[in-house]
Image 1: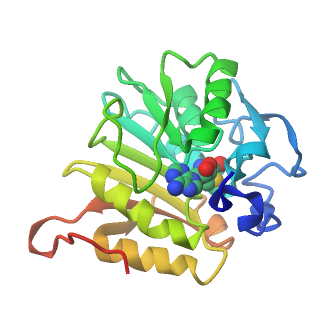
Image 2: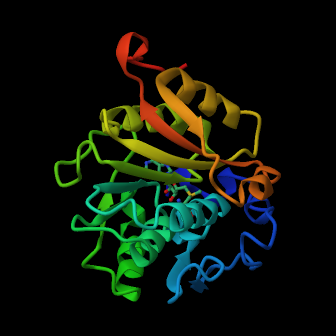
Length: 245
Ligand SMILES: C[S@@+](CC[C@H](N)C(=O)[O-])C[C@H]1O[C@@H](n2cnc3c(N)ncnc32)[C@H](O)[C@@H]1O
């Protein structure tokens, strides 16, 4: 397990530092299963295996809950005929939630993470009988995107992927590679440390960022330092070629 994916690389108490209206109160547990309905937005709750042995993605994170709820409310029927990739999916909370509650297809949603997380993603796809609509794959930020994943997806999802400073330029590089002229990344992050703002600064230099304003929960989760942005490639003369500082 790399340091970047150790639970200790973030303040794990912060993980649950969010109002109970957004995240069901739970204890941090070594391994187990959770039912998640996103406050009733899913008729049939997701069954999610959680296991931290391969990294911090093995538990549910607050920004994942926020992003999934936003998409279920506001993008329930806008994702049809779109190619969709989730980055840093962990156990697949967001992608599986979307696959269960939004109209999608015919392309599967690709939920991606580092190789050690692949078995957990696959287990959760099976647990929820979503293998016809969700595909798990390895996508290591900063590495070339493999051919079996859409190269410029319409929609990119990323939740709670800002927590380890050395990974910031890698994530920026992967977003550069994936964002095509018509792509949008729904990016939800929780600011835990001052350093996290460095990621935002890098992203603003490299891309066009718009804060999401049509989420009824926004004022609640902003108080918990959680933000949702739409990130798009810059176009025209201001287009950035590289932004790693
Ligand atoms: C805090 S977890 C968030 C998991 C999930 N998105 C959620 O909201 O519940 C961050 C995820 O990013 C993944 N990650 C960290 N560094 C990565 C990298 N270099 N390439 C791909 N994924 C990475 C971790 O493995 C982990 O699953």
